Amino acid sequence: MFSIPSFYELGSCSDTYDVVGMLSSPNPNLSPRSMAEAKAVAAGISHKEAERRRRKRINGHIATLKSILPNTIKTDKASLLGEAVRLVKELKKTVTEQDEGGGDYPSEGDELKVSQCEATGLIKAALSCDDRPEIILDMIEALKAAEAQVVRAEMATVGGRTKSVLWIRLGAQNDAGLGGLRRALKMVMDKSEGSGQGSKRARYYHL
Image (cartoon, rainbow, N blue to C red; front, side, top):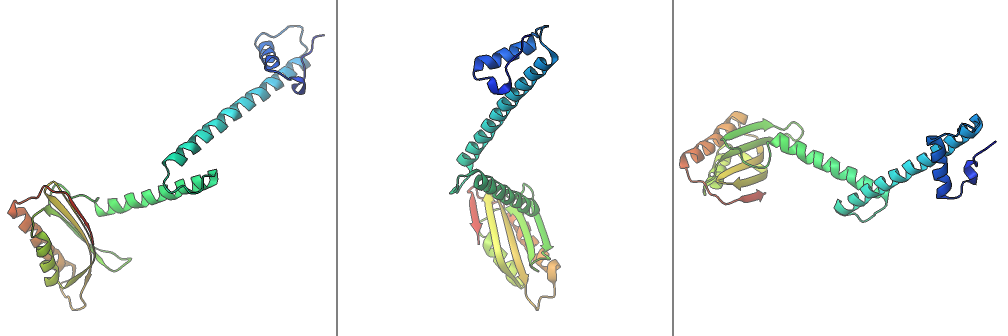
């Protein structure tokens, strides 16, 4: 009776292909035991090939991470994956902050948002309007009139439009509160609307 070699007796690629050939064109003279052994050998070969392809794909992705990640001092797989996770979290945080702040760039229409930040106790004011040379001075005067102190400011001007995001602390003697601050900033925004003097230069400020 014909029998095929066991898995451990297969020593060459030609033997492997013979096993595959036996399964694709089974010999009617093969016993059920021989056919089972052939299937086991073929399954082992298929598993090894699949594992080899999987490792190749993983190594390819790791190489890609190594080439695109900044500050990759350590290049082992664990360090690269850890840096990728850290960077993704940082990007998600940045996107969330931009969504909450309405983005870094001015809106097409005039817009004023004033809200209380519960975590810090500060007031956040976001103002988008037409740009003009004296807008910063007008804003300073408006804040002084409202007895407001600027803790942090971010400003960007693109295509004749400007956006200012201010984190403000109101004075202890301020009785007008958010309403008074909103009215003061709205006067700045309305003055920009009537000026019609938009600068086309792109300017960015972080104060």
